[in-house]
Image 1 (cartoon, protein in one colour):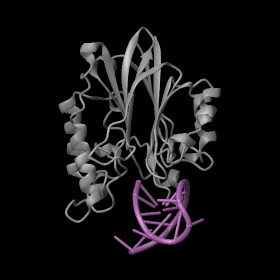
Image 2 (cartoon, rainbow, N blue to C red):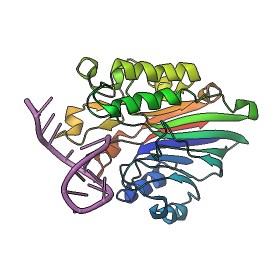
Image 3 (cartoon, rainbow, N blue to C red):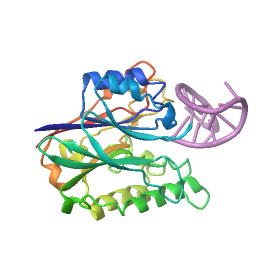
Image 4 (cartoon, chains in turn cyan, purple):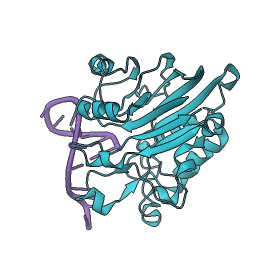
Length: 270
DNA sequence: ATGGTGGCCTAGCCA
């Protein structure tokens, strides 16, 4: 039984609607999780997605900033929108997908705060917010619903590149927000404490560099290749064995009017 | 080198 899920920080779903449609028509994932939709719920382009077979949606948007959405060809149920750090930002949406083989999977879709420029919470409240957000995410466990027969997948733009090979230069980025030790330790601590499996890294060995984001500010993003792996696909251990392929769509960074993030797809064969 | 580019809330934030 095949099942696939894609995560993509789209940086405005309305501006890049044609790119999302192209992805859905070519990659054809069962589920697409978007971040930074930057779109209030009543302006979300639901009809366009329904028209190409993605009839089930769980959206959590707000005006101008953040925003997450789950689009699915398979039925969704029990959607939830969690609030972190007591702030009502649209940074999380979750739903249970009815996957093939009567498998039920809880999908969590996150947009973690970027954290500002200065990696010091005493002078930069955004960095403190990011650390607190990750700390609160520790409460989310991969096996929390397994007793009810529900497996878990956590995806999204976590804005942290944990491994040395998740950035173009480990040394040069140690003091750059997204790759500081306090962030990377907190993120890997969350994986261990919550028993999440980093699916990208089960298929791409830690010796190999892998990036999902390249800054808009580079003159030539491909030539410089100064990327970071900010986007993640994690799962509960019971699903990890079923992973058949991980696809990081690097070419999407070269599309017309691209997002600065590329889609990552996990293919399962249960 | 303290820039650079891009999106939305028109112009200052945020990434």
